[in-house]
Image 1 (cartoon, one colour):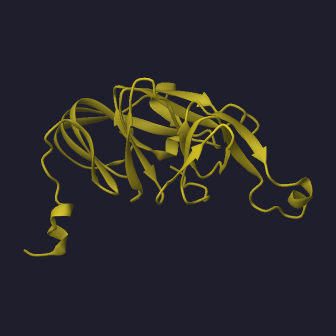
Image 2 (cartoon, rainbow, N blue to C red; image 1 turned 45 degrees about the horizontal axis):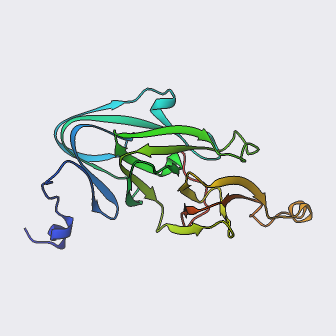
Image 3 (cartoon, helix red, strand yellow; image 1 turned 120 degrees about the horizontal axis):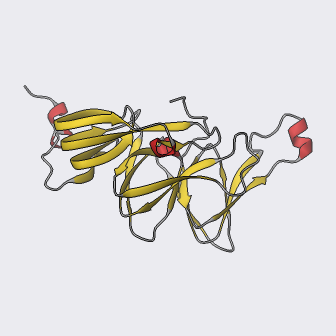
Length: 222
């Protein structure tokens, strides 16, 4: 049988070492030897001896989504084998987190991660006035984290003398050491007349970076 479908870039290769790698721009391959964590429902294929177990719905079993405060459920994958993860054909990126690093991530952008990473749900400082609060997850430790993004992300440096203002619906994540607050860029008069659609943004100050997606659409319900 012949087809471009069987081109080398589409074929799954046997992994040489355990852990996470990009299968292609839209999916992540994870060679499991023990345990790893992923968003529920994101596994698209696997081979080997693996078990998929829903993590409890306490704080340790979900990641908070920004703005709505809703939870993103996680699952634990245990055993020996290979699994492939993806979500709605969104673009995938792998972040290597090293000791001393701290990355704040919107739960909706998490695909999977090493069990060696720690995550803590925190209220975004200065953003308590939004409906339900603004919650994100801070990842620390040592390991790899796979993120998904609807489109190609924009990574914007933040410096002490040049803060960045990001739409809360577009934020993927940022350096955890940045200071955050809400910023109103629309006058009361403009809001009364119908508004510009850009009423409130997340203001980030300090030294680091912020990652945004090229879309302000409200994400689909999980």
